[in-house]
Amino acid sequence: MITNYNSNRTNNKSSLTKLFVTTIVAALLMSLASCEIETSDNGELDGFWHLERIDSLENGKTVDCSNQLIFWGVQLRLIEAKDMGNNSINHLYLRFEQTSDSLYINKVYENHWHEDNPNDEVGGDVPVEVANDETRHYGINNIPEGFLKERLDGSKMVLKSKMLRLTFRRF
Image (tube, rainbow, N blue to C red; front, side):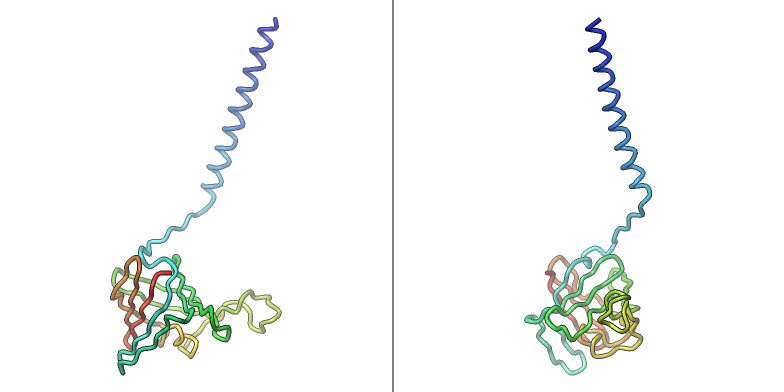
């Protein structure tokens, strides 16, 4: 009789363990199935890039940006252009498309933080229709703006527009 009781108790523990594991696995599978997972096909473009130099193709002048904190952060179909050393310049969000040899920035937005930010009368992301001093600060002279990818690898990115050549280093 005692042997029979211990055997039933072991079977109950085993059944509860199997039920628990099955429930956890089912919950994980349902949570994965309910989410749409976006993956990036940007290849080497994805990442955090430090703008080091801007070369003018019109007059040959060069602006050394290596000591400034100007960055482009690329993920999925969005670039965040940010000057971390200059609080008077807005952060920009750049929507883009790309091919194997080009990058096309088709929409630009000024980052005015959250829509209900009491310190900002505008709030939210504000579309920029025409290039201005802030877009030029990041090397964008036209909206939309097309760039030829002259170099893009694990450490360097060189983009050439009609007017400028931008040289970045992966950060």
